[in-house]
Image (tube, rainbow, N blue to C red; front, side):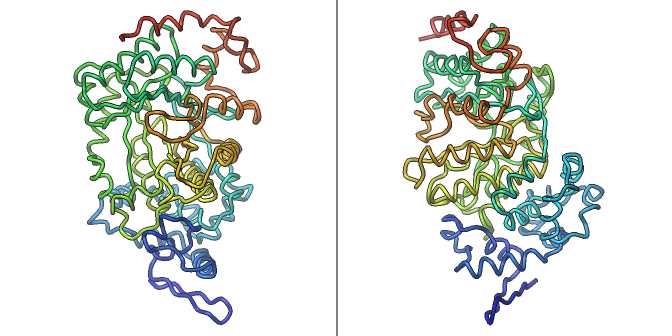
Length: 464
């Protein structure tokens, strides 16, 4: 369907929803690289004007990637909840934005509507929103998940402790892990990106984290971020797997490039749940996504990168994850050129994920060849905290020496909790208090007053 709009004496036409969504997107380098971006600010505004008048039902009638060619499209269509969508059915994209920002869009109303909102609807309405709109609407969404700790409760912020090491050295990983625990990080999970994919070395990492968590009764969950097939194999061989990780995307072609399918993800979820290792819940999946991934794999089907990203959230939603993470600035300046684009993308991803009912975290990050710095990340971190982000990363010194990018540090988690009055996940908070690492207000205590010294013996006991 062609969409037309006139601005002054100039008329603009857009061939179908895919072009309209792409041209309405805020400027970013990835869309320009793909040749789908608006040619001017005027064309971008014309696309937004036209998009505002599109009925939400159009996204049910006009799949962006054909149903018969793409299993993500089939998932979106076949899992759509018509009853949840019914209160929104008469709305246009513009009216949907107005409703999201109104007092009628309460947390309860948003939770009820989430199964009826498709990724394309979420992407479309985000393109009409200012940054403050994305923050306000996302803050009203509440998504709570649990395994050994409960993530996403009001007034709480969790941290993924990320103790990566370039050679998977056990002592180095434990030193970083204990450093993070002493700062109160780790309630989202302790997650290692392994340097090696060798099964024997992966098993050593699972055993290392399991021994630490079990010995000291830490109410958190571990994750070794290997390929999902490695994790299924590890479960079959008795490894102490808590969370199963996988990067996912918004098209079947992209997921195929990752070596995965929806059936494989379901197999992994069933395998992890069969272990029954959770104590307060059974959300066992951890997914990561990122704008630009589909374009980098030539798997975007002519869609803009933010719409592709939103479609990835349908894959996540189908598998009841504990954590979903947009690694927003990791992919580089070819896709998000500078701080302005990274900040906008981070707010979009968090909003769209929360609107669709996902437990969203964001890796507030950048690569060293992007036009961004740590001050810019402070800005995005603060905005996401105001928007109610479920969790962020905790990386030693904010510098991941294995993956080679800049993220957020343990201290950044302290900053955000102190500034916004946020607390840890409740089970983890109780453990920190028992260990005398924090006081009754959630503030760090003097380490000399804590009961954490036995934790340090884990480093001496680690294999060399």
